[in-house]
Amino acid sequence: MAGGMHPGRSGRSLEERAARSGVAPPPAHPPPPARGAGTAQPRGRHCWVHDPPGAPGVWPGLLVEWRQAARGWHGRVAYAVAGPHGPVLVEAWVPAALLEQR
Image 1 (cartoon, rainbow, N blue to C red):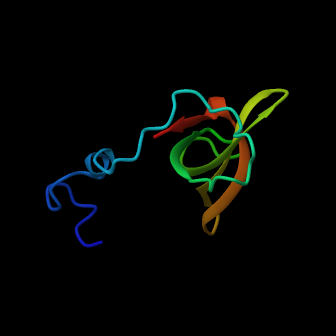
Image 2 (cartoon, rainbow, N blue to C red):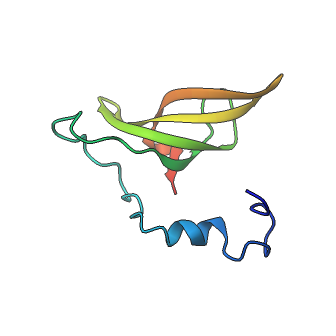
């Protein structure tokens, strides 16, 4: 979209537009798995992935779903990291402690 990356040109920031979208903010803690999985369509949510294995730093990601394992909650995320020949798309189950929902 033209002008979307230039502050002041489009009026409201992406954060402001998202806040006005009417979509409820994510819960502070991972939700329990939904009963009767398959009855509701999952929706992805933007998140930040902090220091995933092999890619130190903070990376933007898409949180697809949650699961509870013996070691706690994990989120299935898709995120892009810098690779030797350009961006690399990663899909992985990441411990909840490494995820920051936005």
